[in-house]
Amino acid sequence: GAGVSQTPSNKVTEKGKYVELRCDPISGHTALYWYRQSLGQGPEFLIYFQGTGAADDSGLPNDRFFAVRPEGSVSTLKIQRTERGDSAVYLCASSLRLAGPSNTGELFFGEGSRLTVL
Amino acid sequence: QKEVEQDPGPLSVPEGAIVSLNCTYSNSAFQYFMWYRQYSRKGPELLMYTYSSGNKEDGRFTAQVDKSSKYISLFIRDSQPSDSATYLCAMSAETSGSARQLTFGSGTQLTVLP
Image (cartoon, rainbow over all chains, first blue to last red; front, top):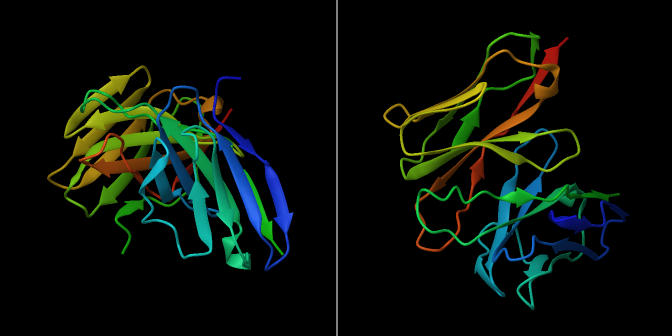
């Protein structure tokens, strides 16, 4: 399909393990975002890429979280030494480059990667 | 206090009812206001977008923004069972970059009963 693709859809891991979550954005979308959604909450911003570089990583909770987008397309969110509090749905979104207020800047979300840390 | 507060759910209404969903916010820099709809185990999808204050109508949906009160609303007319989902308000300030970082409300879960 032409939408945002995220893998894996579900990941169960043990406390202390390393996890990678992958996002394949819509072709041609230069902006890519990672959000985290806990149960019963709205998505919380983690990091935003414009091209290959992280334009804003102010939402990353600590240095156990890291994300890359080496070729300006696919992105990987990496979580080291996972903790039970990291359990959530990790959402990836992509959007076109904006050109003013008339552009909605719509974020197109994937279905998310559901992470469970035991 | 969160930057964006959303009326807690869950909300259950009969088919055909008018639904009102609301959010308040504290950041006066917010200028872009959106409503996203999220079905169970799916990603959010954009429903309505408004820049600055005013009303916007799209079919059965009307979005209202009152920046003076820092209050936004979404109205759904003639609600249908297919409208059953979680509704998330989202906002963004003007950015110097070319994309917007959204701040979401916690969501209101709506069920429309047949």
